[in-house]
Length: 319
Length: 287
Image 1 (spheres, rainbow over the protein chains, first blue to last red):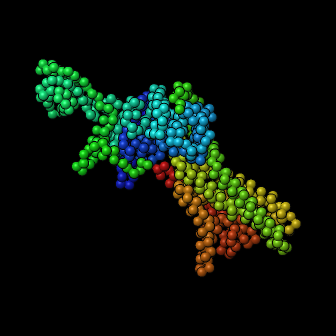
Image 2 (cartoon, rainbow over the protein chains, first blue to last red; image 1 turned 90 degrees about the horizontal axis):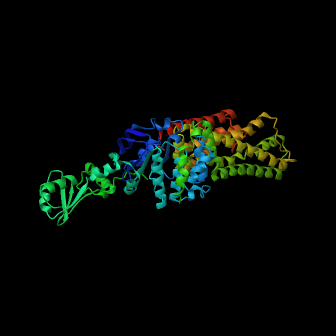
Image 3 (cartoon, rainbow over the protein chains, first blue to last red; image 1 turned 180 degrees about the horizontal axis):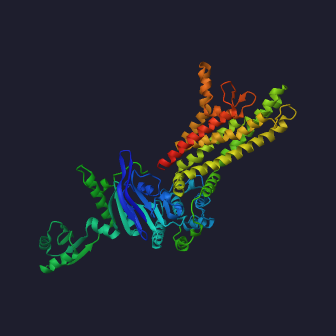
């Protein structure tokens, strides 16, 4: 369980994280989604005490991270695949990390095997590929058999097989009742992995809800209607929060209403429907529209609220 | 590469590790720092260079003494000590680099974030690192000193140049070598902890060791106050612990020089003051 209250980080005049509050629940995979520079990594660094919050606080399993007697058993963190001395072998890195908590050699061997590093464990980390480094980072995170896992962009640099492996691993860990907090800027990956999503943009929480709610709420579900009486039906459905668009004769795309309402309205007016399909927006669409909104709120320019603009809110401290 | 290992390996995560908990202790941090220290090639390169430099200088000195005809009694005992002690001048360069790299290497590679995640209170990790570095430096400088003595012994036999291990001044000068080298290594370490940058920390340390005394030597030619102030500079003060027969390090002992114990204590005080600053900064700064 991770609880943040009013968590804020400023670098000079630049606000990276702007008073965010959220809770990451055990037993499920919580995705932390946002464009590069939105404040994901800064937030995660504050959770494990690497960065000091300018204001607010965050606890892990009920306490500030630094107050735990056995921090590696509480939290396993992959914050940066390069948080390893390049001159040291993977096995020695893990052995040193294990030694801080008196974790035995058997567990070190176990995480090496589990992450598929067996053949390269004796090699110096400096020669590792991005994917290998990522696996070593995950091995370090798992070392203490922690109750909470914090993984910053864990699938970065992994091949498709590795991506699948991480997805299965985090789902398995959450199913054991652990807290899993996973960041990504890859929306499609989140859709497959996470149960719950916290969307961050420009240092603020834009959304915090189960995956399906995020998808539904952000764009509103669109209903596709095919009818020979398109004009009449559109007239009947017209209301303040209902948007109707048409791309070809006899086809309506309706948002702001539901299939039930549309079907009943059509039946009452005795209009024939050839198709009535609720179209769920993809998480990707939801994310684009969410972050586009955050740009609209912040920007005074007359520029279009395009996804490209939303993704350009990059702060320099990331990278 | 390992989608299949999930089913085999992952269930174990729920059961392994619980038996060994109480977590982080200072002793465990020392063990961890020792594993980190010995598992880097740069450690062994710099330590080897320190010993080779120390013994090498002594051997060159001893060969020179053997080649020349020295007879005067006083000079003989002075040279006897100097032959063994003077190797410090080479060893200090290698050890300063080691001292700085021990901490800056973690910052430049990002390892420090792993270190602080495992030991989020930070300072115990700093003290553990300091302890490992101190013990290793003492051991290596004593080894270098003993090797210098044993290897120069056959060269010096018959020259009249000898070492009187019963003389307290001689013993103080010899014991001063590990003391001084350890202090200088820790000075480099604290500068590294403050600067967090390898090249910057090494350059600064070498500047303090080599350039600062030179500046005061130059100023001393023109200004009478310069030697008095220069005597208080870190390495000039520290070198007094190895002084013997009017020579201290690369300079002469003058009437403004600090006494041996006063000098090494002042160098120690510089280290302690910088260490306090390093500790405050380490707790306060983002990693």
